[in-house]
Length: 195
Image (cartoon, rainbow, N blue to C red; front, side):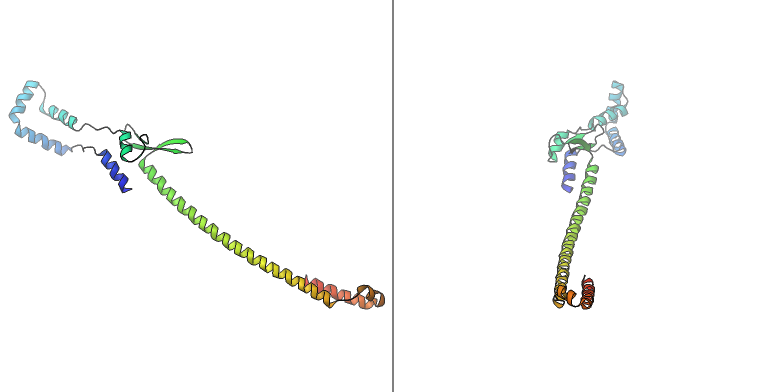
């Protein structure tokens, strides 16, 4: 950023306009040195001394007009990347989604800072999302494991129940209907408990 500012200052380096005090000091010095010569010249020309000094000063401090392409080149930009308004304001040409704009350096700086902020937030969000997905995957793995164990226990319990009640139900029903009803009731209750 400092390099850009230095390039801008080098490209713009326009002589400063003298202050009112400096103008007065220059005029006083000229007056004291050339009192006689000035009086003679002003009498001959018919112009007052102060008007002559002001016109000379205006010529010396004439504003230098900047060429946008030269300035852009000094900054290492393309020739048509800058626009200098009539007020002397420098605008940088931008293109976003095919739409061209001209923005000031302050607006570019603000946009850069905003982009940095958004990038940091986006990276943080991406990291949070990755952490969430890892946690979710770990929970899913744990849940699947627990579900697999529960299914296995249910299967073993059912097999144990069937092995315990390894009875020929049809024969028991015909030979001893009361014991059949009692065993069936007992089997059904144990099965419901397992479920």
